[in-house]
Image 1 (tube, helix red, strand yellow):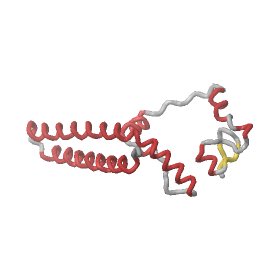
Image 2 (cartoon, helix red, strand yellow):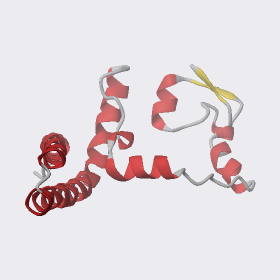
Image 3 (cartoon, rainbow, N blue to C red):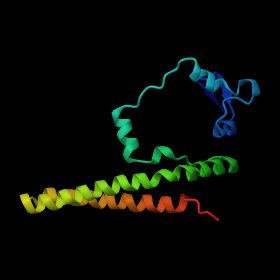
Image 4 (cartoon, rainbow, N blue to C red):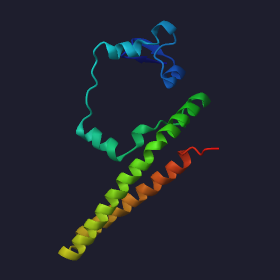
Amino acid sequence: MRRDPKASVWIPRTLEVLGSYSPYPSRMNERISLVADGAVAKPASLRTSLYRYFFYGWLFRDADRGTGLEQAIALRHNRAQAKWLPIYLLRWAVGAVVLLTLELVLERALGSPMLSAALAVAVVFAVMYLLVTTICWAFLHERRQ
């Protein structure tokens, strides 16, 4: 159990995973009333926005911790979030193509082997990230039966 600072109640771990703030039916809508009372969401910083634009780790939950029910809920959540992985694949593929083009231009036009090598390493990292993301998407993507 942990204490929720917004709702001023203790939350059992299973209800926290399910998204409920309180085990009492009369307090189930407390989360909605907090938002309706005029609380405005603070916009994310540029650093956070860039991180979320390029990296998808914030979308997923750890499906290796908790009880069996919590693991099943986390896995279902992760499978639902896997729909965003092709967008991240596209972003990184475009970035890899831009880096590769820049690497080729710098090598031929400027004749700078050190800068070209640094960009080539960046391209290799981008390709590895694409491979890992593709494997994650393949395992999480639900197949229609």
